[in-house]
Length: 211
Image (cartoon, rainbow, N blue to C red; front, side, top):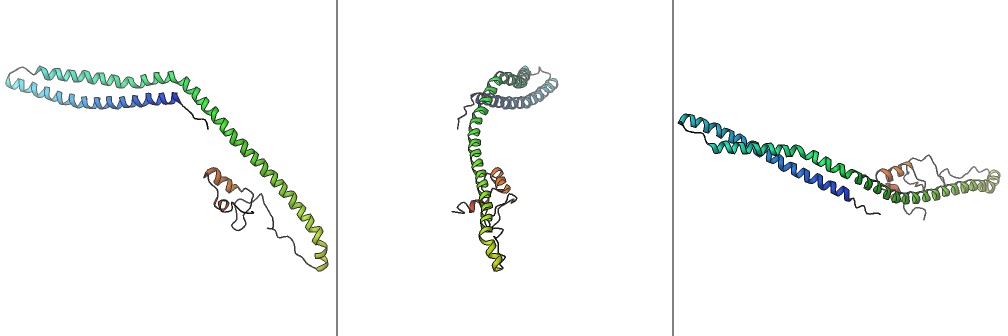
């Protein structure tokens, strides 16, 4: 199996992860600054009210702190709003290389699947050739039986014949029948293998049948 490196995928994931981390930090900062500004605004209002009541100048420091927090909030919001655009711009640069890696990945997997398909096809051909061999032998058996036993059975007044189930295979059997396991692949067996990625119960149980 070819080991896929996926360097561009890794790089893009790093970019996206870092951008997400940066977003979370800025969102947290914005939330914290909003709370801080709310508190400072209330403090400025309270200080202003006290200054009027006590006939003194309002605190300049509180106003400076409020203005500073507002500027920081504005800057944090601006940076937060730019992250997606910056990331998208960087990813656009990587898209061409990403497509190259995607094409190479599919190409490498095609080689692996073609190997499996070849092996499956060889098994299918061998299986169908065995079905053909079975049909020829079945027809020959009935012919041989008829030539060997028909005349003597008539003379003896016997009406025995080969049981329907003796060496009988059918293409119409949808699933395995308990007690009458068939080497033919049934639709149910194929479904279980394909969908459930497993052998059907009766198939697993009869791995060594006909030995």
